[in-house]
Length: 165
Image (cartoon, rainbow, N blue to C red; front, side, top):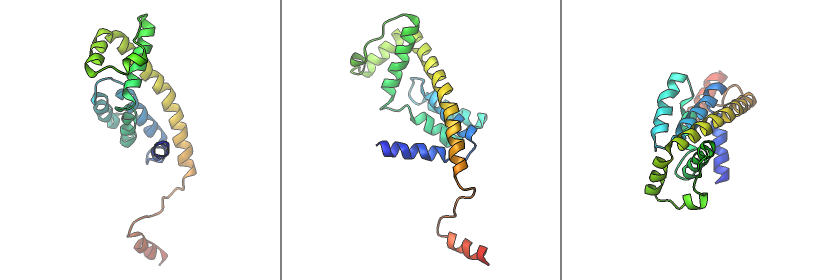
């Protein structure tokens, strides 16, 4: 699982696009996917990506970071941050991870201001951390790649024969 994750990260770093566009895409996708309404953040991020000239595959990758496996922990972190900032007590993770969908919805409605504040703080913090680190990493990886990618596919032999003449 870790090897597959590393390959996906490397794939993002090698995307065709500027370091700014790729870093902005991941940041945009991650930031909007932190909205605790399923698929809303993904659709908003993907709609904004072309307008902001963000890399679309990188944006999609950013939205995939928050998924059914990571979402509950991330949303709980948003709730905890928001509750801490407004001075209320959030349930413990041990209790919250056993919640049903209905219990999560009830908690969400009950502490909506804290949840919203926590979401904004977590999203802003993620953007401040992710964008510059990813832009640096993409630029570094792209500098290490050859300028022209090798031609692959069945037509590559024909192209090589023509170019050799």
